[in-house]
Structure formats: structure tokens, C-alpha cells
Length: 151
Image (cartoon, rainbow, N blue to C red):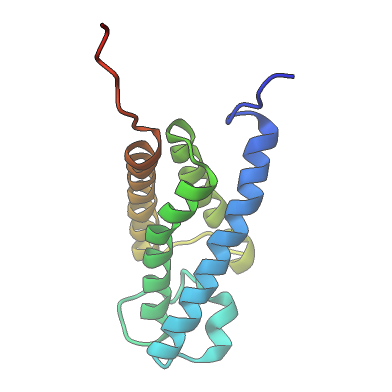
């Protein structure tokens, strides 16, 4: 029996099935905290992670939604580090999270996102997630000391 590789289909699907609930569980946790903190209406909470229409820098639900998105993508580095544990695959999972979030946003809102603030935020946070997850898995997991003593 050979060792199962990190890039086999079964491992990728298993990791995505672990990563997605962790990502959206954290998203809703942050949304609850920020909704309470900004005194936003609770009726908006279930839709908050997928709301691109009210995505502005005004107090209340729009700011809670923006902050939840930014903080969630920044904290997703921890999930990728502990679930994926592979530098060469971490950017795949980071980009997959961004694409899956975009698809789910289109499905839940039943419209294509047209808000430029949402687009700039989602692209920049996903790029930041790619870079941070690559660096964290490389420096904290894959980087090993090289033995140079050949005597």
C-alpha cells in the first residue's frame, strides 16, 4: 500500500468538506458578534455573509458585513494551516474558498454581485489569504533545518 498524496482527489474533497463548514461557522460567529456590536437588525444575520447589496462603510449591517468578510478571510489562514498543512496546496484551497464563496453569494442572492466595494474586498482578501496561507504553511510547517555537516 502506498502513501496517499496530498493532491489526491479523496484528500482534497475531505479537506474541503472540513474547511468549508469551519470557514462558514467562523463567518457566522463573527457575524453574530459584529451584528451585536453595531446594533444591526438581527433579521439580517442569516443573509449577512452573502449580502453584497448593502456592502458599504456606514454603521450598522453594512459595516458588520464588510468587517465579517475581511476578518473571516484573514482568520481563514488558521484553518488552512491546520487542515491543509501543505505549502504547495494551500493556495489552491484559498482560491477555492474565494470561488465557492462567490458561487454561494450568487446562489443565495439570486443575482450577480455588482457592488464594486464587494468585488475589491473579496479580491484583495482572497489574495491576502493566498499569500498568508502559503507563508504560514511554509515557515511554520514545511521549513526544516538543513544539515550541512557532511563529515
